[in-house]
Structures are given as C-alpha cells and as structure tokens.
Length: 535
Image 1 (tube, one colour):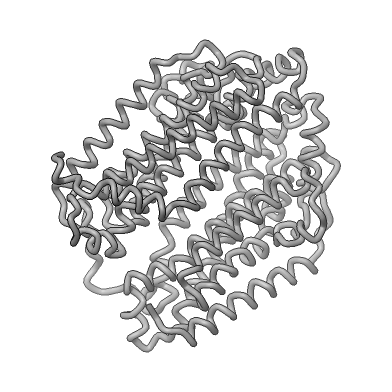
Image 2 (tube, rainbow, N blue to C red):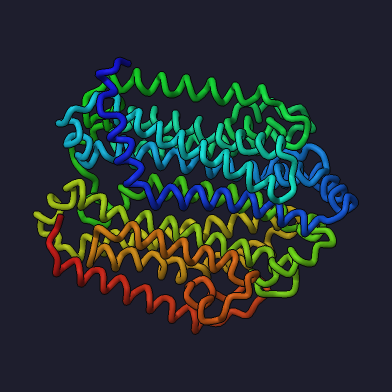
C-alpha cells in the first residue's frame, strides 16, 4: 500500500457516491426505519412489565424462538428490541455491505468499467479502497441514524449506541469478506454467492448456538459475526469489548483482500473455473439444458434456505398465541395479512405470503440472468447457432418458472414439517401447507414477468424496474393491511389477490388471471427481444 497505489481515490469516491445516490439512501432508510419503528412498536405492544416478563419466560423456554431471533437478555423494553431486531438488522447490514463492495469491485471489473477507469491516473488499489470506503461510510451513517432513532423512541442512549455499533460491526465484517470474495471469484455472481453463503452459514451458526445454549452449545454463537453482534448485549450490561472482535476481523479481511488483489491478474479471479468435460452431455444439446446448468446452483441454495427457514417458522406456529400474549394489536395485524380469524392459520398464511414475495425475488434474479448473459457477450455465441432469440429467452423463462415452483414447494415442505412435528400431525398438515405455498406461484411469476418484459424492450432498465416493483409489492404486502391502504392501492400487488391459505377459500379465478398476466408480460418481453438489437 503506497500513495501511488491509491492515486485517484478521492475522485473515485465521489463517483461511487454519485452512482449509489439512490441505492444507498434506500438501504440506510430501510434499516433505520426498521430499528426505530421496532422500538416504538414493541413499546405499544408490551406496555407493562408483566407483559414483558411473560414474553421473556416464553422465549427462554422455546428453542425455536431463540433460533429465529436470538437469546433474550432481560425483560426490559430495550432488551426485547435487541432480541427481536438486532439479528436481522445485522444480517441486513451485512447484505448491504456485500452488494456495495461487489458492485464496485468485481462487477465493475467484469463489465470492463475498471479497465476504462484504470487507463487514467488511478492506482491499482484505488477501486478496492473506494468500495471499502463506501461501505464504511454507509455503516457509519447507520450508526448515527439508528442511535438517534432508538433514542427518540424512548430507549437509553447507551444501549441504542451499542445496538447500532453491533449492527454496523457486522456490516463491516461482511464488507471485508466481500472484498476477499471479489478477489477469489472471477465473476460478480460468484463473489456475491460466496459472501452470501458465508452470511447464511453465520446466521445458521448463530441460530444453532442460541437454540442450544441451555445444553452447553452457546459457544457456537461465537463462531458467527452475526452472533458477535448479539453478544454485545445492548440494553443489558453491554459488552463493549466484543466490538473489538468485529474490528479485528474487519482489519484482517481488508488486509487479506489487498494482499490477494496484488497477486492476481486484472479481470481474473484467484480460483479459475474448472474446465468441463471434453464432450457435452445430452442435456446441454439445447438452450433449456444450458439455462438449467446456469441456474441450478442458485436454485439449490434458495431451496435449502427455504426448507430451513420454513421448518423454523413452522415450529413457531404452534406457540404463536403464547408469543403474542395479550397483544390484540399484533393479533389483528397478523389476521389482516393472513386473511382469517384463526390465529395459527392466519400466521401461516401470512408467512406463505412472505415466502411468495421472497420467491418473486428469486425469480427476478433468475430472469436478470438473461441481462448478464447479454452484457457479458455470452448470448452472442448461442444466437450465432441455429438457436433463435425467442427460444433462448423462453428457455430461461421456463427454468425460472420451474425453479420458482421448486423453491415454493420447499417452503411449504419445510413449514409443513415444522408445524406438523410441533403438533404431531405431519401427514395432515404437510399437504395443506404445501398447497398454501404453491398458490403463491402465479403472483410471484407475475412480478418477475415485469422484469422479463422490460428486459425484452428496454434492457438497461430491467434491473431497476424489476427490483422496484418487488419493493412496492413488499411494502403493500407487509404494511398495507395494517396501514389500512385503499383497496385500489392494495390491488396493485399481485400477492394481494392470492387466496389466503390455509384456512381460507381456494378460488381459481384470481390464479388464472395472474397466470394470464404473467404470460402476457413474458410474451411482450419476447416480442421486444425479437425487435431490438442485441447488446
């Protein structure tokens, strides 16, 4: 690290902030709003010490809740806020940092942008330093805003600062990890996959340690950066020294990233792709087989995640009434989202709606593989063969449809197994919960079809429009019923029209209409692709 290797750092930092002037404020606002509103909301739900003590007793004797949210240290309002929100705030901060670092390192290198920038007076280490500076500033802003938000909601300032620092510490650790992954993998997709896989394993280790701490398994929590955030114990005799672990891990990761960057060629990762066999299998004889080969890794990861998360929320469903206690506000919110009066059915229906939203995110990312293939020039060799544009794109859309159905099936299977085991009725609950998951398929595909349509007509806008539509649908799905939004606004989201199962009435009409909308949007995208230039 020399001054020459960081030449141009200031100009590149300003350029990076300009490029992320929309994405970063959205991330920061969302994380701040979740933390601040969480403090205010729990204060309204658990108004008395008796209510908070009852919840604390339930949590301490329920390993499933500990797996989902973490250990609860005390029964104060601040301790409840930390238990309920810190784990997921740290997870989200890690995701934000991963996306920021990979976007400004491996993604820019893959698209050739860094090669163009490097032709100017720019040091070799400057782009990597820019990405880390950007992630560091974003997490620093989070510290200030989250501390202020929690303090305004009436929580102690010291605990609020510990909460914010623990969350940002996790974000910085995964920023450093993403920088290392960007040196290892030769593609942005691979770098994100490595970093997100480590993030998922960290969440799983934290869950295993928290759920087994009564049996001596709490040491597993210390293996996870998310667990480090939790054991800071905001609002409950804060352990400030734990923050030094996150700081040391960040410094080590950044040092390793710069050392690896000095040892590789521009545009290449340290781990080269494994050469395939000399002859392709029959499955690779057409574009559908190739699309399956490209998507199967991501599909397997999403499927495994849906099964694990489904089992956890299914186990919790048995005690949802005990968890809510006497809070009619939360019960009403769940029944509004779930659509029924029976609390357990409403809870499962609401969870299935959330799975449908997440499955739509998977479908959008799979659809956007078409855009990345075109941008990288990988579509041209395929289209130079007897394969036409429509067949190439339709093959990917076919795999997207099948993959979305598979991950929703995994969600229903996991939730059905978890709930069935909890109430000793697996054979009875598994089919009804799987059905509740699969009815989300037309809505998830309709959302993803918007990205497909935009890709066919205006490809440069497909990512922004696709993810923006998903964000709007998410806000409507999660907050719309509680905010009593008008019916016409609720109807904007395809997820609103899905039958609320289990417990509700299965009607085929909305599912047919959603399927027709998805087909029409996909057809519009294929027609646009035929008429425009490639690349």
